[in-house]
Image (cartoon, rainbow over all chains, first blue to last red; front, side, top):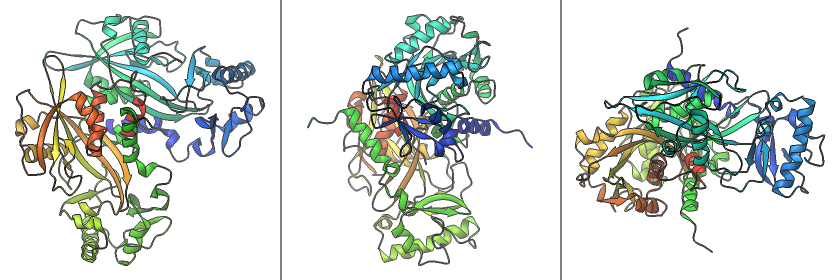
Length: 300
Length: 300
């Protein structure tokens, strides 16, 4: 069998990152997770069974949904009650994703523009299929001749997720109550030692959205994408140890790498979005151009 | 009641252009239109009844689908057989959309990357919910001080669709077998008298996709979006009479106008996509930023 083309491998990546939308996904068996009458996530049946042991916090499944008990009617009240349950489940060690406990609070809301209804420990969001938001950066240079190169990071081999894979130069999750650009600038400083003045010139340009599932849970995510053009003399430096090395690579090489298993999948999507916006992939020569764009922006 | 904000009006526009996805749309009652076992469109029940009078071309509805008869097994055979039916229906004058007959052949295919299975008269595509593709151009200038202005067209008052509304400087449908950039350059020449050399510098940057319905049919569309930066001295000129006038407006004014009824809705989406890609709308200050991006890329 002939090796799959770049185009086919990219399509496969996008399908994998959106496998929650495929026929045959767990979606049909999932329960909606509702707070105050509005859906904020998806719960797989085995997680719903565990939660049913806490009837003072979660209602029994009804009409395809699990809700927080009505008595939990405040942001802090809901957050603390769910947190107690999660601490107990973590103690039991029956859910492997809770081994990745982060002590990072993510906001829970029906839509990004809605007020948060509670916060939740980052490691637990996939159990509830709660949407997570983050920031990703495309840092690039343009030579006098117009040649584009991009800075990539190699993730530390001790990272909990995707150790040792290629990644955008900087990226991070959006914690409860923190600004988007502020988060981007902070991640640039911490992960790549980018001076604030330089990081502040990053420009928002897109979001990339997708939903995947694995054995443990459901991962609806949206990443706010920024572009940062840096001068030829710029060099990122390893900061907080999340990264082991940085490389400046010609964009054609980056394009090739993003369709390999050596690249963190959602970061590969962010680079693909960059290639499209910067006319480095063109519709007359890329047969799946329109499907690429669609696959970068799937939402429920 | 307070007037709706710009942000709310834009969200409303996006919802309207994606109303086929709303609960309460005709989607639930529509039949799939299939050719050779693959879906290529959506047919409303009243259209299916009309088609049932031509059993030598269309199968009776079965399993939620209407298909072309298996004996029609070639591109030309299918195209001609459907064309004959459409000419007969046009004669009867029972479908108002066929009064807008264009003599333009659109390709019909399950996905853009698939080989076309037939062609169809442009005016009939909405009856079959066949996806239409087109090109749209954002033509803009950047002053020495970095101020962006955009060229807009005012559609001729005699245009069949959206007469007298504001529009992108150039746009057009993608006819069967014609290249995307080629179509863009041709529309630039015909509609705005843009020299080929200038039009050729347009850069592909996105697609914008949506599906709306009205009484007559279903309109799934994807537009290939190009950006063209023109010098300060550039002036488009009225070409083939599709446009009555052109205006160069500060981008803030364009932003305001796109959320009004004075703007052709899909062209307003193309401008919104430009604003996002060029950081003229930012996620920290636009609460619906992520929903805007999602609304610009809805596909079935």
